[in-house]
Image (cartoon, rainbow, N blue to C red; front, side, top):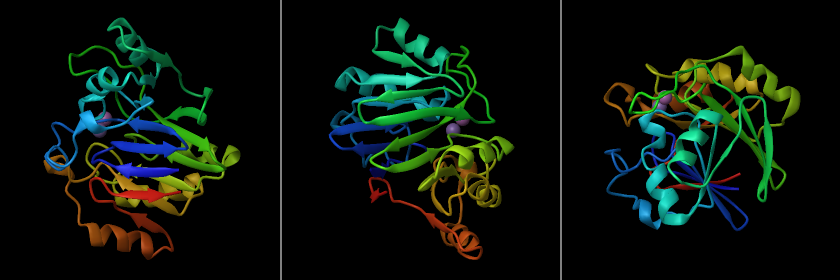
Length: 226
Ligand code: NI
Ligand code: MN
């Protein structure tokens, strides 16, 4: 799996010939809007963790441009299905098999409403299993005991966790979350894009390093392999 970070929780995951976009928020993100042209992004699927603007903003435009299928909880599925876009539902605790691998929609502690105020269902995260690797994308969440369920079922190779604090976990809770999910390799997301989530990158990396863990912070457009 090849993972590219586009800022906030926006990711592109390449698995074989398939490309999955997660939580696209680019055109109003000061850190990525001049670096990433959403019309150049490839997408077979767009996975959305929840309905907040900083996760769904560019989903419709990318879906229309690429014909990608939007995947999320039932309420978000319905929202896009009613707009005539290709969408398929999942919900908490459910797994679904795709041509690239298997995905489970798992619990998150957060809120979820669309920018127009309509209900976005409960927020979630995704566990992607493909090519013998497993990645956990927590989405926006607090530290939660539910994370302890994951290592009972998965061996996670990379945990993608929010670290920006204020509206999600901060660094210290993300360290605990990595214990809970049984994965010492963390890709940090959901920092710097909002004025109140600016973090000190070096301090954040050191906090993980001190306890024998690795925190990876990618530049916008930078890619890593799992
Ligand atoms: Ni959110
Ligand atoms: Mn968010």
